Image 1 (cartoon, rainbow over the protein chains, first blue to last red):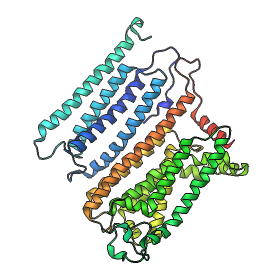
Image 2 (cartoon, chains in turn orange, purple; image 1 turned 90 degrees about the horizontal axis):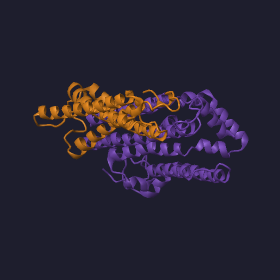
Image 3 (cartoon, helix red, strand yellow; image 1 turned 120 degrees about the horizontal axis):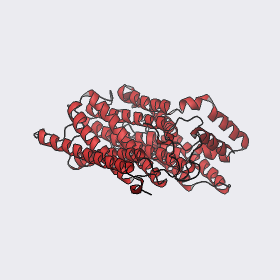
Image 4 (tube, each protein chain N blue to C red; image 1 turned 30 degrees about the vertical axis):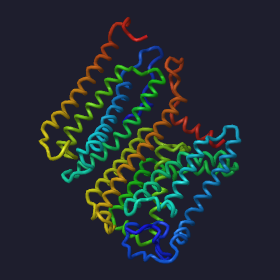
Length: 167
Length: 312
């Protein structure tokens, strides 16, 4: 993870770059989606279990690493975003795009790699999994697509003639 | 499981009830309360002394030109109170029985109390209030290789996670249930390693040559990942691990879950302290957007200056 502190400052008067807004919000998106997964599916619905006996060894290890990284991502993302806001360097459209990209990317990663490849856990037990998996991964893909559209639009607006630029 | 108050005067560990040990190890007899307090006192008195010394120094620093934050003092007292609660009989009465209570005690000793103590910046307080020769000696000590190597986030994470793995995956845990010396040594290790780690990752105290934010974040994620993995591993192998624990599987599984979510909370607090410090530092260093000179001084320079300020 590269520290945002090492990034060079833009020259005074130039429009704020999109990347920091996008990345900081993506970190928050990843963390928020992980928290939703934890709160809704683990705690409220209790569909997933803390540990199911089918988890592969490598799955358990990757689960620990991912879980640790999510928590740090959401905290780091919030402070990074706050710093951008403080310096008037936050581009909201890029940040929303980044947030949805992070959330959708995490959802899809969780649905494909964690559930299917590493088999950390399944969405629900004792039911036909196909509709659950489809809903899970399609919703992830949808979030990802919305994020991509927002991010591309933010970039296009940046490339548009100066009259349409933000002051 | 026996209640903590049923410990006899000849019990090996009245201050730290071996809730997961077989009941036969502690025949209930005599004056349990007095004996428990007698064994807790050698730990409680130094904690009390630390609290008093800090309070005196903080008063002195508060009267000085730069003052002393009440939040830091509150953080120190919170840490001391948590330590005292974790080792004293009334604190034990609040804990759930069995391995779960033990786990809560370990989380407080190894994670929450050290973080509160580190955030109180005791070294900064020392450097500000001690007589000048002591300040020079302390500053020299901070610049020596030992704290540099020990206080590197990766070393601190390895000491922390390594100690935990050693206790939980080898017969060491079972041995601590019968040997008071080992038991106290392990608790001391938890406290020292926890303090070292919190200081290395998120400490406000000066640490010359402390690596940058990226290394500290990586060490935090690594240590937290090992912690989360170990918690699930213990859960998965409940009655067999830790070897020779002798507690029932449901209790050990509950303890593993407490370890998992307690570890999350500690990681969240550490990450908040780490990034909040980054945010404050950046606020001081970076001029607002549109300022004439956007270049920032190098980060290493600010750390040295911070250390120098503290010494003065």
